Length: 191
Image 1 (tube, rainbow, N blue to C red):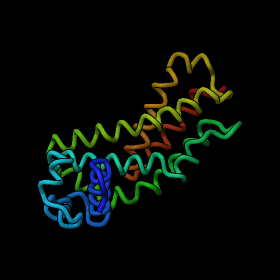
Image 2: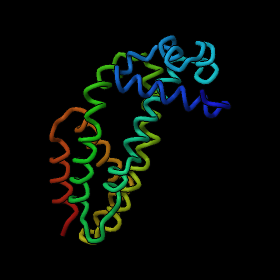
Image 3: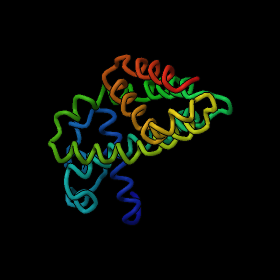
Image 4: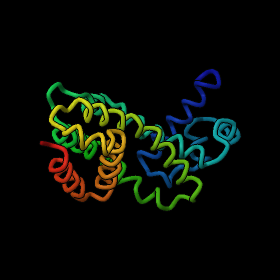
């Protein structure tokens, strides 16, 4: 059994994440989690005041795992001379594989959560997306083939956010809208 508050919180969060990964977000039940952790229900509530806080922690753990996994970290690293389009295709393909679990296990569950829990989950996602935005922005600024006049008008940060937001929706919906965006960007930004 973990010792100390930080270890106990981590132990509970890990157990909750594993339960959600194996059975879905809707399977997160405080009583089941307490039993799995070998603690009382009250102990769970000492670290997570309600189910929304627990779900938020699970979603944050998921996105942190996705955003900072070795495969994704490698994917988010800029390779000297790589253009934005090649980087985006690599990013999309890596995230597509990484998000398979989210689509198959959690996507339906997220829609059934109450509004407050969904909002907290979105906030947790957004915190992890910052890392992806920054990587995209770095590539945009490093790509010497991009017309700088056009880029100044758009803004690297705005373009990075547009790219990821479109990619994310395309990943969730399993559609090809990201390809349309990349074609438009290639046409608009490159000389």
